[in-house]
Amino acid sequence: MDRIDPLNKNAIHVSFDVDSMDPMIIPSTGTPVAGGLTFRETLQIGEYIHRTGRMIALDVVEFNPNIGSEQNVHQSAQYIIEIIMTFFGKSRLGYGLLCKTP
Image (cartoon, rainbow, N blue to C red):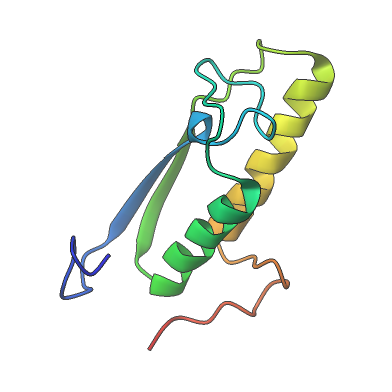
């Protein structure tokens, strides 16, 4: 972040592509990437972005409920919900524990 916004003042629009994650986590996507991001790594990104206090928009793309079994779709959707909640302030330790960085 320091390289792309050295003054730490610009708003952040996050476009999160779920096929960047390992397909074991998000199987219902059109372009699975073996060895992609883990769930933990994704949550760390979300927590970091939230702590900046500068996120103004979030879009989550490449989830396809027409791909995979009903269980695959449900699993993908549940993980995506958790990811979205993390970008909006839910930490792995619970709500309210992610403070804006000084």
